[in-house]
Length: 378
Ligand SMILES: Cc1cc2nc3c(=O)[nH]c(=O)nc-3n(C[C@H](O)[C@H](O)[C@H](O)COP(=O)(O)OP(=O)(O)OC[C@H]3O[C@@H](n4cnc5c(N)ncnc54)[C@H](O)[C@@H]3O)c2cc1C
Image (cartoon, rainbow, N blue to C red; front, side, top):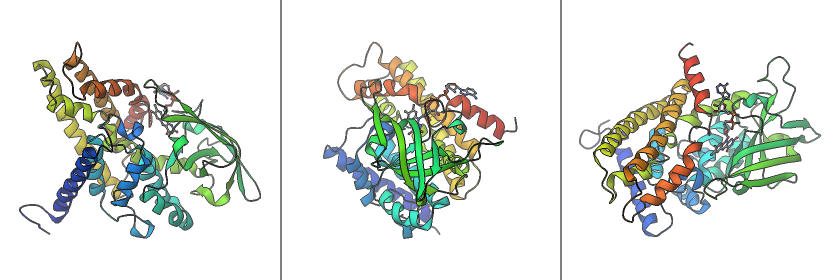
């Protein structure tokens, strides 16, 4: 149906929602509730801010109402995400839960898990960390050695996870563990389970990064008892669960907007870029726009549950490289150092220190190119 002017109803909804989010962000900025930062979806941890988003219905937006969601479209969710990221708002506390854990529970969770967990995730009251990587298992995730053995009431888990973002500030760890020996198929015998992070035997050690912050951690699981009903999906089917999360994990606007606050400041801040920088900025803007189109397309496919692994891997490979290039453009434009005041020096410093992680987290770019090559029939 057609709305006002030449807009469809769906388009008018997006325009109104975008205005609403921008208003909220302007008010929050004016109230001093956050300072725009680069890499805000990893380093901007604010349970308070996440609660405000939850109260406005901006978390779990696409989930069914029966589980506390908003039953809204993927495009509406995308609109909220890109506005939050472009503003550099502190969204890290709920990011994994909203992006991955909720969709996973909706796909393979039990009715009880959905009813008890999803409303808390959608209200920004419950936070989840992703416990996949281990000291010797990153790219080759199927080699995880954390083990779960059966007990009378569930499972006893032992092992070590690393690079676990925000485990020291989350309620649950969604953990990939080995529940049976691999046998001939190394993807068999893996399971996912939700572990309460205050359970006896869980030890979380924050790991300091170059900025001096500690957003990720090492988690040691020392004979941790996990009730049987905390297994997510069928026992032994964990690999499929992890794989089903990947397209969600790799395709969103956070894969090309981590340095957008820096880019925006470079374009519209007080430091006037020279002619070379302007050409670089134009090229980056054009590529940002193309990546946005690709990312949107992937969200549509995900909504229809169509296969999107190749396109999702492309978003992340191209997007994370562009995020890094934006740092280089800003650095060249600001040589010998940003003039004047304003937030540019701080944004540049934090973007530069975060940049090495862009092409690592969520699967390295070398691995992603393998995914793309295979998807194209190589
Ligand atoms: C900021 C940040 C946050 C993170 N948060 C989390 C989190 O919350 N939860 C979690 O579970 N993990 C997290 N990680 C871990 C991340 O998923 C891993 O770092 C990533 O999967 C790579 O694994 P690795 O570090 O073991 O590197 P490795 O797998 O050891 O790779 C090292 C190098 O070898 C290359 N390589 C490896 N295998 C191949 C191959 N087959 N072909 C070609 N090249 C190859 C890689 O591309 C890379 O350059 C995070 C990482 C970062 C940087």
